[in-house]
Length: 98
Image (cartoon, rainbow, N blue to C red; front, side):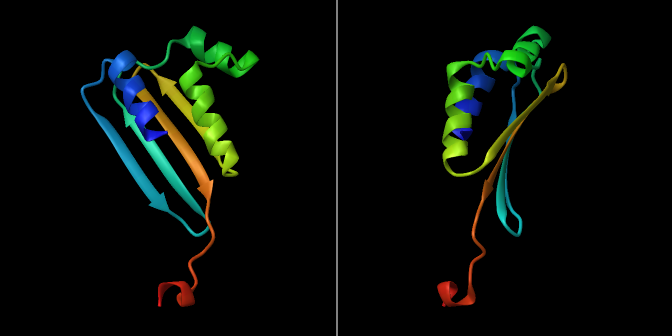
């Protein structure tokens, strides 16, 4: 997912930077990839929202994340795009750490 996002940023966004954050909360891992590019065109966003007309890369990310019981969210405007994946995880027991 991160690789696909970074490829999309390089190919389409015009952003010179990308931020990747990985955070584990109680029962999920959240992965965020953010750029400061031109954003996804509004027409493309509308198509994605209405009829699920996604590019191959985004569709692939959604499917891989869904296989793990997670979700994918994409927010975009003229100031950039952020892709957030949420994946459920089991809490680590103290026995597993020992």
